Structure formats: structure tokens, C-alpha cells
Length: 77
Image (cartoon, rainbow, N blue to C red; front, side):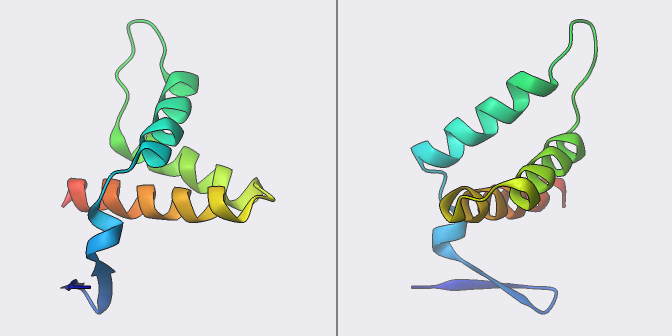
């Protein structure tokens, strides 16, 4: 498996792939944040994913949140 070095941190190829589970999780978070006539910024989605990761007792959800946060953070840079 290849990796991309980023500011002293390795990001694996697997973390760059968006699977159905990640799409569903991001969709759920975005649907909760979206408001009529209000812009939604990527950092708000990342923040919501972070809060979900911290609160969730489900290990797989925590991992998926972490992957989604890394992917979205890369989109910001």
C-alpha cells in the first residue's frame, strides 16, 4: 500500500478512497448542518465529524469519521 507524506504524517492510499460508508456518514452530518439560505463550510463539517467521533461508542464510526476528517482537511489545503 502506498503512502503520501504530509507534514510529518503519513496518509495511506486507503484513507484517500471514499467508500459508501464514508459517503453515508458525511451525508448524514451535512444533512444535520444544512440550513436554508446559509453557506456550509468544510471546516464546519470537519468539526461535526470530530464531535461525532468523540461521542460515538462504535469503533467503526470513529475510524470512518477520522478518515473523512483527514480527507476533507486535505481538500482545504
